[in-house]
Image (cartoon, rainbow, N blue to C red; front, side, top):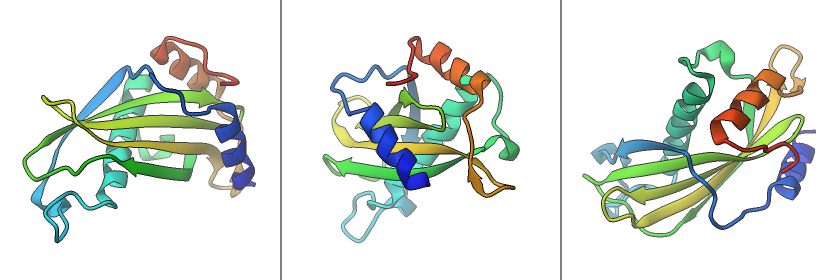
Length: 159
C-alpha cells in the first residue's frame, strides 16, 4: 500500500531544476560524522535530512514539533552525492515540499557548503500519512496541507 503512494508521489512531483527552496538549516560537520576516508559517511546524510525535516515542520506549523505530531512515515529516501563534505565545514540544507497528494507528499533537499556554495548532495523523500494505531495509511490533514502551501507560497496539491 505504501509502495503505491511512492509511485504516485514520484509520478505527481517529478524532479524539476530550480526548486524554490524557502527554508535552510545549517549543520556543522562533526568528527563523528566522518568515515575512514575522512569525509562525511554516506549514511550520515540521512540524519542531516531528518534534522532539516524536523526543523522545517516546526517552521511550517509555527510551533515546536512533538512526538505525537509525527503522523507520517518515510516511504522512500534517496540521495545523490555530488562532492565530499569534511570535518569543520558548515553545511546548508535547503528543503522544500515539491508535491502534495491526498496521502503523501514529496520533499526535496539540497546540501551545500556555506560560503562556497559547493553542492555536496541532492536528495528527496516521499512521506506518507500513517495511522500508527490502525497500522495503515491515512489522509493528510487539510490543515497541514494548507500550512505547507502557505509556507511554500504556492499551491502544491496535484504537483
